[in-house]
Image 1: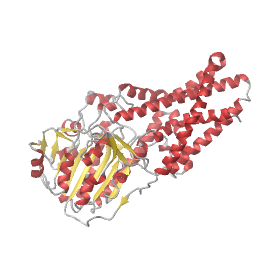
Image 2: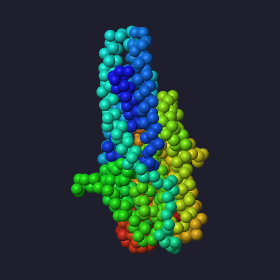
Image 3: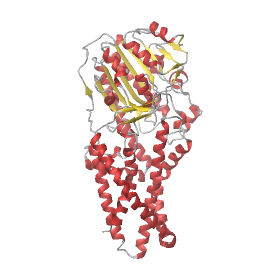
Image 4: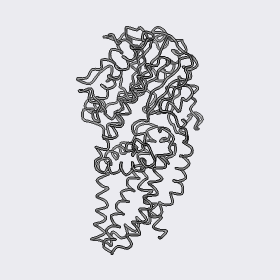
Length: 541
């Protein structure tokens, strides 16, 4: 066995696995932050894949040398074509990672969005075409193909040396990301009971314009609009940002956060703009700490943000799910036994599924997302029924695209678009309001409905999820206003706040309510200033 064969096999293995490994070794540990820890089985599965593929590569190279000249040339050309495709895929992954970094700072380059759409459409056709093309070239024009194949093999041998830092980094992450949290974390209530309750329902990417003011033709949102008629609503709220993982920590701490990263343990860091340095996010200076200090027994059910890790020790009850796209690309194919072997087998399963049909692979991911969303709703209903929780925070993953609902049948499906998800959001709100009304303290419950940001038309219109219907309804324009409305216990009329206010005012209002400084409509209006009546007020509950 030649050393060069080993190097080439290891380099080829790293290229094949790079799309999977990249999120794990990218600076900032964003994958760790959004993942349920620990990572032992995941890392074990990836290392098993690494060893098996590398050994198989050495065997293939050894056998290749024993073949006659023509088959050796053709097979070598096919393998070189495969690894050139892998190199292109790695470039795409790096550009996607750059796009994610840019997302923290503002609008993303249209070229990257167009590249993503193009690659999603053609990538797994090229994985067949490129090996066949180079194999055919090696057969009919060996003088042209030979230097290409030779350069590819040299490049693979050079890539192998990246294992000297990638493998130790994976081992380091496995050892550091050791905190294992239960699926549902419950702790003893700080106080046994109180006669008031606050339920804060946050819909991800809910548009104020479409949900409350100018619904799409043929759509009505009775639960949202009835609640709007009996609430103080903020019709000119200025968003603090456009991305959930920046907005939520900002709102909860009354601090505009523009950049975040994570420690290897999944702890949140943010860049302090004044000092230009990374500092730890201080959960003791957030609304959940205020709630605990004033005896509200806070409880959270949410997604995307690792609430149970960030606010551990402050919450009486907590449940969270990672967001769509937060996991590794192969994780939807991991078997339910969650073993090392299931992780190892999931990688080729995911690749074969994508190669066979990217649409079917997308449908599989959406089906898993639907299952997670249903699980979230069950936990939200259970938390609302637990009347020891006096400050309830529910972060729903809708109407955030992609579509997971059919608004005509009111049924979950791996279909639809943002407009279908708007109907889903309204239906889920109705379910949660019914759950609140069934509690003994319903008459003393204040309900807050908000969104982190509005429908981000510029972000979605250049993706595979955009539809002609969405283009027609949005007209390509972005209305940045998020939703924020408060229905105080017993409130029967609605007011609209027209003053342009920063979204961080939500912290001031919630903090005042938790401290007992804002007990009703008059207190709130005194804080925010002028309001006007909402037309068509009706009974929301």
